[in-house]
Amino acid sequence: MLRFFERSLDLARRAGVPRRHILLDPGVGFGKNREQNYQALRAIPQLLLFGCPLLIGVSRKTIFRDLPDGLIEGRLVGTLAANVFAASLGARVFRVHDALEHRTAFAVMAAMKPR
Image: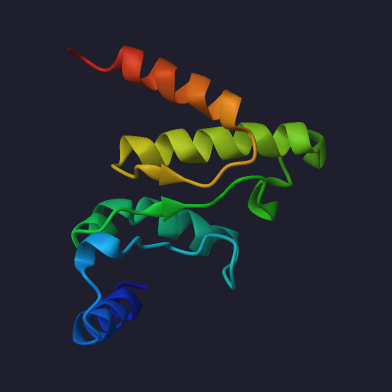
């Protein structure tokens, strides 16, 4: 994944795309098994070294289907947990289905940070 982004960012640079116009997406849920998806999320600190914001799009993904009953509600819990984890590592852009729940979760996370 790191080599992919190195090549992609080099192509973008050579094409004249300003770095400030780029978001990196580790592609959770696309061609990866569950462990590879979790590895992609754990790699957030390394991906941030590229100097671009990260887009995290784990909302209701099938990697969370084995949570209680495999229902959308179970996927919501997995999605919230993964996104709060990603935010704690420095991710700042999230594609979500359940915006209010995420706004609340991120507000709680922000309230718990030391001041």
